Image: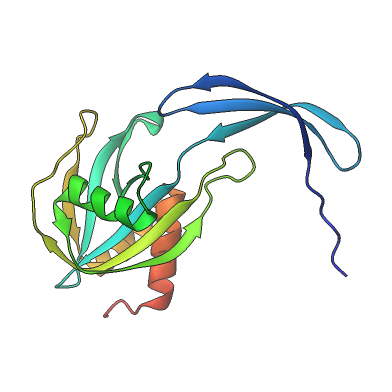
Length: 185
């Protein structure tokens, strides 16, 4: 028989910082055994999306950009934040178009994942967009400097296999994709 895991009781909650890109709060919680933890930190974020975008000729639309926290230029999936009033699908389609100029195709949500449910409250919706094509130019935010890359399946698979994708929220759906699709699809 499985052990019953009980929820914590939140006794107090206060915000430390509330900014558009960072909201953090500290909760005072009581654990099921009665222990009081006076400082459990939670990062609040809107939901996110990422997109495995595959062109009509079966190449991957990837992006390359600088990531300041890790001080590296990285190759990633197109991704972004869900805007208020948008469904996750609408957010994903908007992000792909804005960051790459690609759109169209057939879309399906292939998984939802949490980045670190111990301290983060949001979900990442992962989409597969097949048959996309270039339909516009990039429309980047002021802080974005993004290069669009068209990569073969083998190149993306090799990048994953060689630990060259450090973004776990992007590696997970790509691994799922490769687990369910042949490299020659």
